[in-house]
Image (cartoon, rainbow, N blue to C red; front, side, top):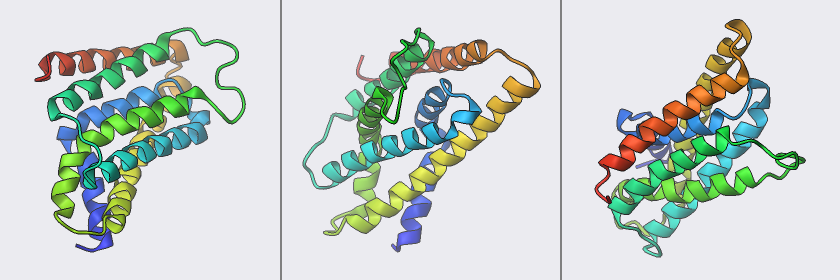
Length: 193
């Protein structure tokens, strides 16, 4: 496979309707930001990608693996935590300056979501010794897909907030509540419980 095929596979993996848990996490993460905060969202998406890239690398090198049923359980848990965090009152000191604990949390959640990709990625690379090119290409495809999801969400958010005049708090609560509800169904249906 060449580099561009790995990009396409990363994109396909995100665009796959069966990967809606990953899309749901991205949407839940977006819910706490207004369209004008698009730069913060791009940084968060990149932190998320770095997290799952690290997990993919460690998994491909057989350094770290988790039971698939545990990962299937933990992914919706990250969505639930994100949705709850979206509606909790924010303290004044949060999100000041360039650093936010959101980046650390999203990076950590990226590690968990990366485990959801790890079996697929290991199958892709087979027994190849060099994982750099496949890993880089695959993650570029994933990142492109995530940025498109963020873009679509921000357009929808802009329409709801600025054209339809939804209150931001109501919009954020609606999106977070929907993500929470779907994630709870995923938790209930996981083989881990």
